[in-house]
Length: 342
Ligand code: XIL
Image 1: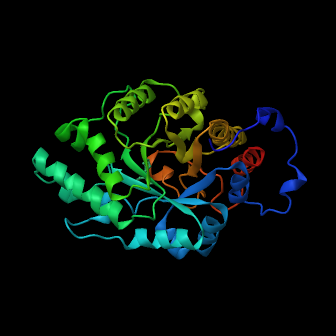
Image 2: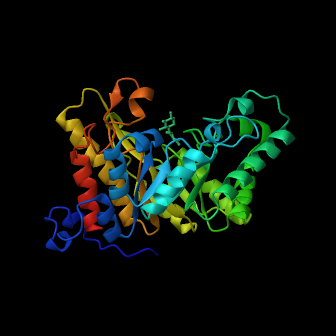
Image 3: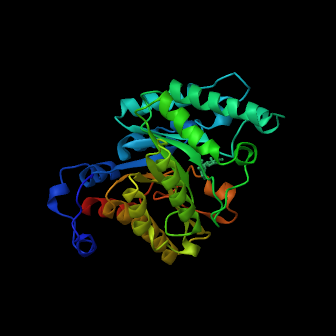
């Protein structure tokens, strides 16, 4: 649909990049434009406000942005009925100024919800009403400004069973269809995505998504995208069946996207791990370019200066394509060169 990719990608990888690119800026953004996809990053709003170098790179290197945190429920509605759209609106404005698309992240999740919600004592009927209001208010506020919405995030366990969350526990699996319908009614133009990690390749988890999409489609539920976060780690290797998995979702009529790619390394990183990291980013990019309907590839942060990994994964880090000093690593060059061939 998007484009036809020549089968020479693998061969072409060994060739030097052509003079045709010489005039374009040396950025991921320019390379992605040529490949017919969008390249994105999660944005840390406090870094965007305080660090001019970071801000310049977000504008120059990327054609789509995602709020790393400020479109999550705990930020948007810290007190029940009191909305805090300011930081997200700032990102909307930045994206418009830089001709970037915005991925909306996230409407329904089990994490980073406000305390009034998770600590409240609500009946299932009340919770359903609260969720409906949250989705309608949020999607309506950003109507016309969001390209993709991550409607539901991380709803399955790795073994393909439903994750035990406030939503599943109280509402059963029907919350998913409800969420997509409410979101679609509020902004019919936004593309609505499922999103998860460890769902790159064929696995019990991606099988659960496949069955769910078949069911949603049969019921006429407006689901349009399969989001693959792509949080990899050098010690676990690269998923092997990613392209095959993307293709089966595309055959169901969905677009696909890599939504949160990073490749963390046990510290200290040695040069083999730095190479393995580049390989991880590149393998996912190749799958995106070889798929028919993979529309974007978003990094979950682009510099080690501002990155969530060290705070969450003990002893791991350096998960992005730029160092803490904004120097390009092998991963950066490898992503860029793969895009140039796409
Ligand atoms: C992470 C952010 O990067 C952190 O800053 C925050 O403290 C926790 O959440 N999957 C997701 C993202 O869908 O929203 C998470 O983002 C990373 C894992």
